[in-house]
Figure 1 (cartoon, rainbow, N blue to C red):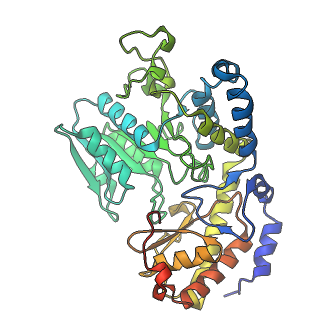
Figure 2: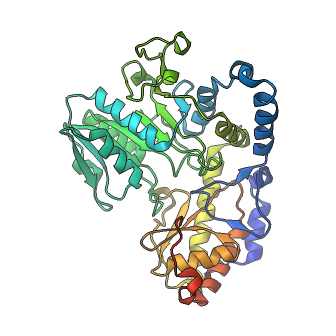
Amino acid sequence: MTEITRQHCKDLDAQDPLAAMRDAFHLPEGVIYLDGNSLGAQPKGARAAFDRTIDVEWREDLITSWGKAEWFTLPERLGDRLGRLFGAAPGQVVVCDTTSLNIYKALRAAMGLRPERRVIVSEKASFPTDLYMIEGATMGSDYETRLVEPEGDIADLIDADVAAVLLSNVDYRTGRLLDMERITRLAHEAGALVIWDLCHSAGVLPMEMDAMGADFAVGCTYKYLNGGPGSPAFIYVAERHQAEARQPLSGWWGHAAPFAFEAEFRPVEGIRRFLCGTQPILSMKGVEAALDVFEGIDMQTVRAKSVALCDLFIRLVARHPGCADLRLITPEAAEERGSQVSFAFDEGYAVVRAMIERGVIGDFRAPNVMRFGLAPYYLRYEDMFDAVEIMAECIAARPWEDSRFAQMAAVT
């Protein structure tokens, strides 16, 4: 096999069509950031957006900014911009609330659209909040939950009793990518609706939600979308469902005439009916700054670099003798994975902690998963080379024997 050198990686960087995007982000000197699937880097435009909102819109213009600065329409304006990244036409996405709340809204809406059915299908290995929300949405009812095993086929669980299928299109531990079109088609053939959790794909995977006939989708904006810690989530509702769909969090922002202050709830037409209460404008400004970076970007180009970065990272680890004990759990085939590479290693937590101390930031997921989210717009090919070298050095140092790394932190 041809040796991969650091110079080879630098040559790839010199030919990278997305290289200039790196300059749009604040990246600490000496840090290789491989945790974009947990919290994205800060866009350089974010500080100016926050300053303008605080110093002018809030401090000077006060309450008039709900109209003057168009705060009130920010959820749908950001939603339209965000929807472009995953193939949603305007009027079908709002930025609002949290992923958990939006999953609950979508679930209850889907259940209401299929009232005669009593089964929810999801994944046993799903991110826990999805499963918790299913529990909450079906609490005290006669609904059944069917969970597909990691190696199982979702087709075996979908039948005429299923109201909704809730799935993550990218597995948060392994990075495995589901065939969205196939699963959506299978669900629709059985008369069920699909809710896609896009938390680990929005911003790095090209998707065509409208073209595939998707029903609902939810996701967060603080991972690959770089909106900032705890920035608002989003919800997609296909236009064809909006007139009949009802979500249970009937807050005043989803009212047809919120400033009429009517005693009874009357839902607004369109996607705004999936809003609930007053939205966090400061946090939304972080999302707006992040979407400025994505303006005009070609998601196919982003995906091409994502695939190349992951391929390189996998090959570098496979060829390095110092990484021989790591077991790749991410699919090697590019079409079967997101923008993430994960390895299983019994002492993985200590290794990740040691790597962070050396300036390579990844994360860990129990019980033994070393997880690296590769954001194509600010990572370089040379970062992959350097990260693997440091990883091998950390493994060789046996950090699990160091008391500093023995205690599991509250956030891993």
